[in-house]
Length: 171
Length: 171
DNA sequence: GTCATACAGTTCTAAAATCGAACTGTCAAA
DNA sequence: TTTGACAGTTCGATTTTAGAACTGTATGAC
Image (tube, rainbow over all chains, first blue to last red; front, side, top):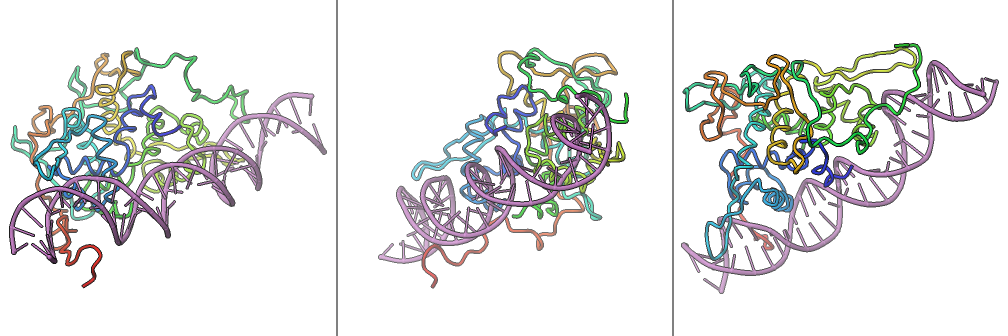
């Protein structure tokens, strides 16, 4: 599988990964949500090579995640601003942060706290079902093909290639 | 910044990215949630090279995201099973899928639908505040340093590094 | 007993991506 | 005139990944 094919895969997760699924892109987006907007800002915050930064920003603009907006004429300069499509990445960012907060903190505790302006409290993000509002557990979710699923004939086989019964495990 | 340093960064998102922030790892985890457990299963589902697959699985086991469990003696064979730490990645996976469902579908619609066993309906994941239950919007969240924040003196400067000279002259 | 196959890797070379540092170009302030 | 801020681009060296073949245990078919 080549990386440009990822966006054509009949899997929303693969498509998302095709857009934001590499380390630098994710870190760039973190900076975006922390209000960094300019080339130098990203570069000095992340220590990314300028070459890669330019490339990643271009890609994010192409994908409609960032918008390149002039903030000064002569010399022409631009800022990179999250579009709505980009802002919609927020739950992904928060989910990443929350997993790190849960499983990767050292003895000193969380590096950052998040306060919800609406209720004024420090919070954790919780993922719930849009229909019943209950927290989602992997085991309570059943997945089935939707309208955009690939027909069986087009599917790349992900099952064992016609296994003719194996060794000591009879069933 | 080297990739192994990422896990030491005082940022939960960076640490998480250090563990799962590359394309193959994310796709391997997708397969885990789709109940793939064995080496050949991952390999044929993803088309990943065997070399990388072995490496990534090892890393995920080292990180405690997967557990390597024997399922047969002679020849010794193992399965890779999500630990609780791994299962806790579910909100990240769902957030990735949901963004793809929202922004990356073609005219045919979603490749997969998700049904919540508890309420029986197809749903979208919604991220809410643990304290008040309201959906989270980036603009309504304020971020501030927590106990594990790096003190200003230890911080890696994200401002210009007091650069004394430029370009070609070394005077 | 020999052969083909399943499974879970390891090893090797070539190709691609990334790093690190320097270079380009515009403009403003000293 | 010189220096510095900013936003990139270019280029050689290093690191990762791709792609294919190979290793080794064990099983069932012939």
